[in-house]
Length: 190
Image (cartoon, rainbow, N blue to C red; front, side, top):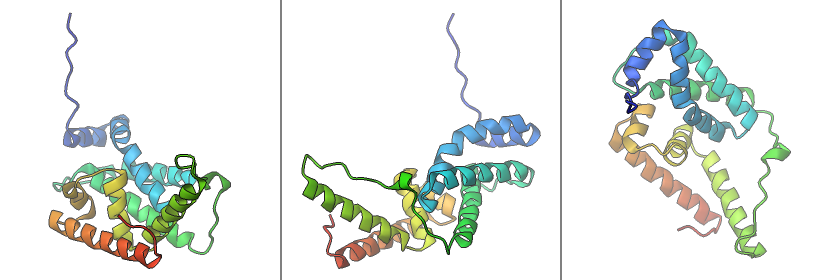
């Protein structure tokens, strides 16, 4: 007897079902939790805070699910908006205190057995991350969606509420400003 596989429910049908049955929200959670966590983690830089904010994102989404309206955007765009607002609030609340957990310290591995090259790469990475953190929030969001979540320009446009051409333009300007920032630090830029 062959096992018949059924296609997963469409996102719209899943949201409609979750509005009636909160247990069905678990499928939406499973579908999007990793992307939302990654987005938040790269915005706050702390795993425990990212876990907390991810949980709060889905808690708010579940609590407000009955007010969600399909406006032609993916459900994930709504989740990213909730996450974005929570991250913005988190940054406002934590603007004054700055600490780095020992767990978050990244010790570079030797690059092909060459400690000098490893130190060089670690410095470049550190400067790149610092330059990214100095970017405007929408540019940071763009880079996270592009390189962490690996979304297409069209998908990024849906999440950010921009046209695809606007995303391409913002992406181009963002890369130019990062290149300039790294060149000012006299670092190798491809």
